Length: 330
Image (tube, rainbow, N blue to C red; front, side):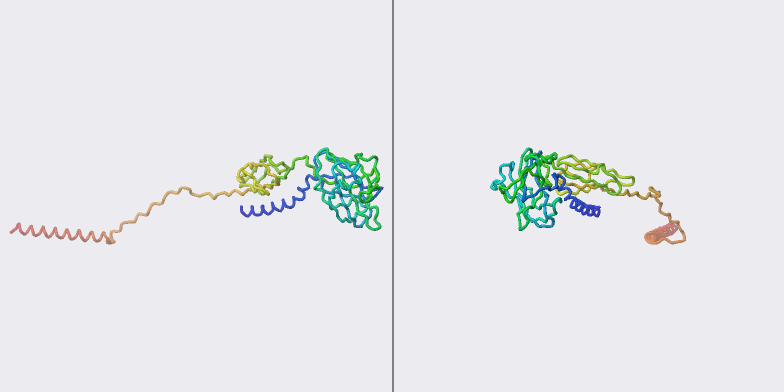
């Protein structure tokens, strides 16, 4: 049993470690506009509207010159960008990074984290993505012609991306609208409760009532183990990043509340041991052997001593009788 538990512990940690990247991105969403790029300039401002509570993560954009290193800056402000295109003081620099362009029409990931940007349902925010011109590079970011500034160009159930304004660097009076941001915005949807993964397995010799699934913290979990013929249930191996209150790994079914972390459960079974039957479970006791009496063998020990005493007594009595007989005959 200890060997099984050690093996399962190692495998459990490995499985959860490998699953972490997938689990961490389980709530990640993305919304793309287009990469047609029929126009370009140093940067573009545009509004986004949250249809549910979201956190931004990062974005891809459309860079014109393939294989060229760009210095990209991203700015953010609450509310619309309209009327604030040249007002640098109301914008916050989120970050800057050097980026190797993938070329026009190809999404280029921008390594600037946007996790500081949170929008609640119905809230509007504005993004300004711009590249710092260097030398001959004067038009750097590809975008598309729009229909009307503020129109919704792309949306999903959580986010809208509106048509915006093309800009020379930086916060220049020279701007062009309507223009459509070319790219993808990645975000987390916070409107759904956070869920966690339950993975359930059976050791050789039995089955379990569920393979697991996705649950919210506090959900009641019940798992039943059923042993195959010739096997019996031994217990549970439970792997979790936290201690699960009230969990008893020897009971069947296993019942616990889902914690705020992923859980791995394995049912353990062992093969039945069949005892060897006793051929005579209640034998009759064997009597002690009776020693035969042999008169030819003289007695020894205490018996011999007793015989000597008796002979002496008989001799004394005989002598006394003879003396009495003589006295009477005188």
